[in-house]
Image (tube, rainbow, N blue to C red; front, side, top):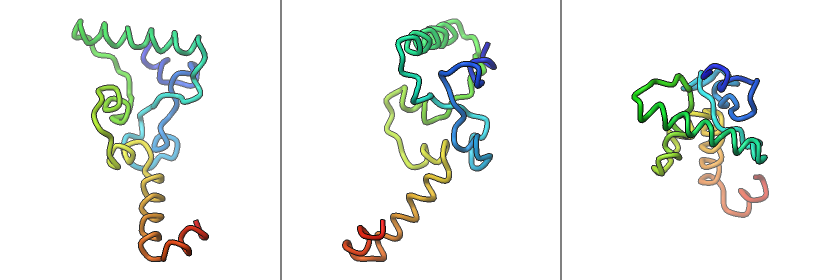
Length: 114
């Protein structure tokens, strides 16, 4: 059942960017599909939540490979650049490059080039 949840057969989860690119940490992890917003999708997410709650309360293990980004968001913990790195290494690299470029140039040059 968990294998099917973490597959392209159901629309609830998608491969993390690190998974798609085979780069960075957590290459086997999945994340929420941002396009899964229909009423049917929301009912399916509710079922997954009930399944996770049942597993938690019964001490069962679900082999659901979700990112730490997901679990930290779920628990309300603040997210950091390390959490983003856990799902998208290339995005973190791009942010760092933009941040470094911003420090090198004055505001006008940076804004016109970016």
